[in-house]
Amino acid sequence: MTTSLLPITLLGAVLGLDTVSFPQAMFSRPLVAATLGGALAGAPLGGLMVGAALELIALETLPFGASRYPEWGSASVVGGALYAASPLPLAGKMTISLLAAVATAWVGGWTMVKLRQRNARWSERSRSGLDAGARGTVIGLQLRGMTADLIRGALLTVVAIAVFAPLAEASLGLWSVDARLSRGLAVGVAASVAGAAAWKLFHGSIAARWTFVGGLAVGLATLVLR
Amino acid sequence: MTAAPLHHSTGEAPIIPRRLPVRTELAMLLRTLAIQGAWNYETLLGNGIGFCIEPALRLLPGGVHTPRFKEAMARQSKYFNAHPYLASVAVGALARVELDGEPADRIQRFRTALAGPLGSVGDRLIWAGWLPLCSWVALVAFGLSAGPWATLFIFLGLYNAGHIALRVWGLRVGWNRGMRVAQALGNPVLRRGPQVIVPMAAFAAGAGLPLALNRIIGPGRGLLPIVLVGAALGAFLLVKLQGRIEGWRLALGVLAGLVLFSVAR
Image 1 (cartoon, rainbow over the protein chains, first blue to last red):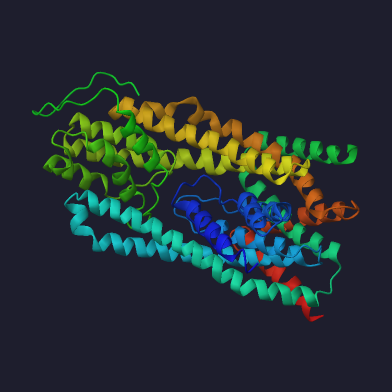
Image 2: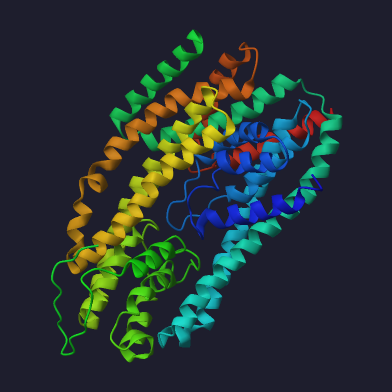
């Protein structure tokens, strides 16, 4: 983990930037970000596993308007990298990685609010230039906001790794719950959130309710037949 | 980027191209990707709109050092709210009306009128439709044993095909229609898109949930039915608690409790 800290931090910075500022192309979705974080730590498949579970949770928090939501980009890099850091199929690895990622996403959401407040203060201080139509002021504010967001993502990632990597190592050494039960519980929680999110999005449409049921039947049938 | 014949409502008749130069169009398109770079709780997207329109405003007679350029920049950098992808419609249309030399008060009214619909249409189409659909399709692929790179390619390829197409379309339709851009919001994709996309997303969600869970849980299927039933009960509880607690916060609490229990036991 130590050797890959710099690339992981840079990835966290870039994917934190993607969340809102640039280019919002959804590289910051957990499915992508955790896989890339896992790849940098040497195990993209491990990252994908965590990313899929995190994606289930993140489906609840879509970036509507000015709403406040967790920042999944940098956080998922942290989750994917933590999971992939240990090559052993240790009990509790999934649970701890998910916990680290969701906690980081929570703090990340708070840092985004602070950044937006900072952007407002910078904008207010530049009021005279904006009122005068100075192109340098407009472009400068935009570049400053994006640079600050990049730094925010980098700091968030490096602090989260510094906090959670030793905690994960210590916790895994003391883990006592059965591996499959741990994983089942963690994934069950994620699936509950996804199920509720799906209901929230689809319950208003009768067609969507029925196609959800149809999809569920197809998914279960596929599992039985495979 | 074709355009209807331009009209000039001010005394000065600027020489405005019927098509935006390719460089200008590309610069505007690239800048729309950064439209939220200075997003804040006071002016929201406002600064971003000014930032994206600036390459087009350079085409005004006299360039960047004229009062007309500065007035336009000041006007376009004020408060604005829209969905970030559909804001490209506003960027194209506002660039066009500025270059057409429409009166300032008319541009201001037009700018105010544009904001609302571009927010609500985009939210329904993208955040409540396209993004969940692409996520669930990728989770279906993941559940069907797709590898890491294939899963990423499916998600990013599908999502960004729609994302980039919408930005390009928005910029072009905005520029081509100018003041008449409101008609473009009646486009069937924008109007009926959510009605088609949401059921598709629901189907993919139904199929993706058991498939993805099965793959994450791993070998030995005995646990899957228990997790599925538990997840259904958990989802029911969250729906009942809606408004009082967000699912991700509950997940954080449960995960923290599980870690503490397992470590301290």
